Image 1 (tube, rainbow, N blue to C red):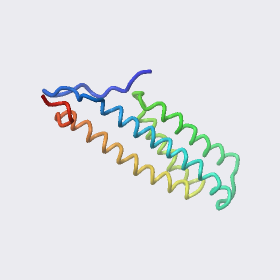
Image 2: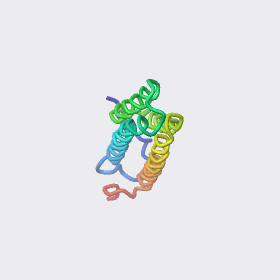
Image 3: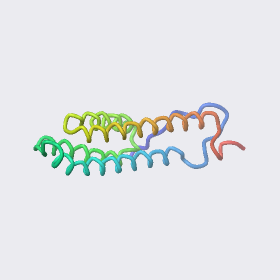
Length: 136
Protein backbone atom coordinates (compact mmCIF):
# COMPACT_ATOMS: atom_id res chain seq x y z
CA UNK A 1 0.00 0.00 0.00
CA UNK A 2 1.62 3.21 -1.09
CA UNK A 3 1.10 6.06 1.30
CA UNK A 4 0.30 9.54 0.10
CA UNK A 5 3.32 11.64 0.90
CA UNK A 6 3.09 15.41 1.14
CA UNK A 7 5.58 17.68 -0.51
CA UNK A 8 9.09 17.73 1.05
CA UNK A 9 9.53 19.80 4.17
CA UNK A 10 10.57 23.38 3.46
CA UNK A 11 12.33 25.53 6.00
CA UNK A 12 14.25 25.01 9.22
CA UNK A 13 11.49 23.15 11.09
CA UNK A 14 11.49 19.48 11.90
CA UNK A 15 8.52 17.33 10.87
CA UNK A 16 5.57 17.10 13.28
CA UNK A 17 5.79 14.43 15.99
CA UNK A 18 2.54 12.80 14.87
CA UNK A 19 1.50 12.43 11.24
CA UNK A 20 -1.19 15.11 10.68
CA UNK A 21 -1.92 13.74 7.19
CA UNK A 22 -3.13 10.48 8.73
CA UNK A 23 -5.87 12.35 10.58
CA UNK A 24 -6.91 14.22 7.46
CA UNK A 25 -7.07 10.98 5.48
CA UNK A 26 -9.36 9.62 8.19
CA UNK A 27 -11.65 12.62 7.89
CA UNK A 28 -11.82 12.19 4.11
CA UNK A 29 -12.54 8.46 4.40
CA UNK A 30 -15.25 9.08 6.98
CA UNK A 31 -16.83 11.75 4.81
CA UNK A 32 -17.00 9.35 1.88
CA UNK A 33 -18.68 6.68 4.01
CA UNK A 34 -21.24 9.19 5.30
CA UNK A 35 -21.88 10.41 1.77
CA UNK A 36 -22.38 6.83 0.56
CA UNK A 37 -24.98 6.29 3.30
CA UNK A 38 -26.83 9.46 2.28
CA UNK A 39 -26.77 8.42 -1.38
CA UNK A 40 -28.20 5.01 -0.52
CA UNK A 41 -30.88 6.63 1.64
CA UNK A 42 -31.97 8.53 -1.45
CA UNK A 43 -33.16 5.29 -3.09
CA UNK A 44 -36.60 5.31 -1.42
CA UNK A 45 -36.96 9.03 -2.10
CA UNK A 46 -36.31 8.57 -5.80
CA UNK A 47 -38.62 5.54 -5.85
CA UNK A 48 -41.61 7.27 -4.24
CA UNK A 49 -41.31 11.00 -4.86
CA UNK A 50 -39.64 10.99 -8.23
CA UNK A 51 -40.79 9.23 -11.34
CA UNK A 52 -39.73 5.93 -9.82
CA UNK A 53 -36.55 3.97 -10.00
CA UNK A 54 -35.46 3.00 -13.47
CA UNK A 55 -32.73 0.41 -13.97
CA UNK A 56 -30.37 3.19 -15.04
CA UNK A 57 -31.07 5.37 -11.99
CA UNK A 58 -30.71 2.42 -9.64
CA UNK A 59 -27.35 1.44 -11.17
CA UNK A 60 -26.17 5.06 -10.97
CA UNK A 61 -27.15 5.50 -7.31
CA UNK A 62 -25.89 2.13 -6.07
CA UNK A 63 -22.75 2.37 -8.22
CA UNK A 64 -21.96 5.83 -6.88
CA UNK A 65 -22.37 4.61 -3.30
CA UNK A 66 -20.12 1.60 -3.96
CA UNK A 67 -17.45 3.85 -5.50
CA UNK A 68 -17.62 6.09 -2.43
CA UNK A 69 -17.21 3.16 -0.04
CA UNK A 70 -14.29 1.84 -2.08
CA UNK A 71 -12.81 5.35 -2.16
CA UNK A 72 -12.76 5.44 1.63
CA UNK A 73 -10.08 2.76 1.49
CA UNK A 74 -8.05 4.59 -1.16
CA UNK A 75 -7.34 7.75 0.83
CA UNK A 76 -3.68 6.83 1.30
CA UNK A 77 -3.06 6.76 -2.45
CA UNK A 78 -1.49 9.65 -4.33
CA UNK A 79 -4.48 9.94 -6.67
CA UNK A 80 -7.13 9.94 -3.91
CA UNK A 81 -7.79 13.68 -4.10
CA UNK A 82 -8.69 13.49 -7.78
CA UNK A 83 -10.83 10.43 -7.09
CA UNK A 84 -12.72 12.41 -4.42
CA UNK A 85 -13.26 15.34 -6.79
CA UNK A 86 -14.55 12.99 -9.50
CA UNK A 87 -17.00 11.44 -7.04
CA UNK A 88 -18.27 14.90 -6.13
CA UNK A 89 -18.82 15.77 -9.78
CA UNK A 90 -20.80 12.54 -10.17
CA UNK A 91 -22.79 13.33 -7.02
CA UNK A 92 -23.73 16.80 -8.25
CA UNK A 93 -24.56 15.35 -11.68
CA UNK A 94 -27.19 13.22 -9.94
CA UNK A 95 -29.51 16.23 -10.41
CA UNK A 96 -30.44 14.48 -13.64
CA UNK A 97 -31.78 11.52 -11.66
CA UNK A 98 -33.55 13.50 -8.94
CA UNK A 99 -33.13 17.08 -7.67
CA UNK A 100 -32.94 15.91 -4.03
CA UNK A 101 -29.98 13.69 -4.86
CA UNK A 102 -28.23 16.55 -6.64
CA UNK A 103 -28.90 18.82 -3.66
CA UNK A 104 -27.19 16.26 -1.42
CA UNK A 105 -24.30 16.31 -3.88
CA UNK A 106 -24.06 20.10 -3.57
CA UNK A 107 -24.16 19.89 0.22
CA UNK A 108 -21.32 17.38 0.29
CA UNK A 109 -19.41 19.43 -2.31
CA UNK A 110 -19.42 22.25 0.24
CA UNK A 111 -18.11 19.82 2.88
CA UNK A 112 -15.33 18.73 0.51
CA UNK A 113 -14.45 22.35 -0.25
CA UNK A 114 -13.97 22.87 3.49
CA UNK A 115 -11.85 19.71 3.74
CA UNK A 116 -9.62 21.00 0.93
CA UNK A 117 -9.35 24.33 2.76
CA UNK A 118 -8.26 22.44 5.90
CA UNK A 119 -5.73 20.49 3.83
CA UNK A 120 -4.20 23.68 2.48
CA UNK A 121 -4.14 25.22 5.96
CA UNK A 122 -2.44 22.12 7.38
CA UNK A 123 0.18 22.21 4.64
CA UNK A 124 0.87 25.89 5.35
CA UNK A 125 1.15 25.28 9.09
CA UNK A 126 3.64 22.46 8.55
CA UNK A 127 5.76 24.67 6.28
CA UNK A 128 5.71 27.46 8.89
CA UNK A 129 6.54 25.08 11.73
CA UNK A 130 3.39 25.87 13.71
CA UNK A 131 2.30 22.34 14.57
CA UNK A 132 2.98 20.88 18.02
CA UNK A 133 6.27 19.04 18.14
CA UNK A 134 7.88 20.98 15.29
CA UNK A 135 9.71 23.43 17.51
CA UNK A 136 12.53 22.58 19.88
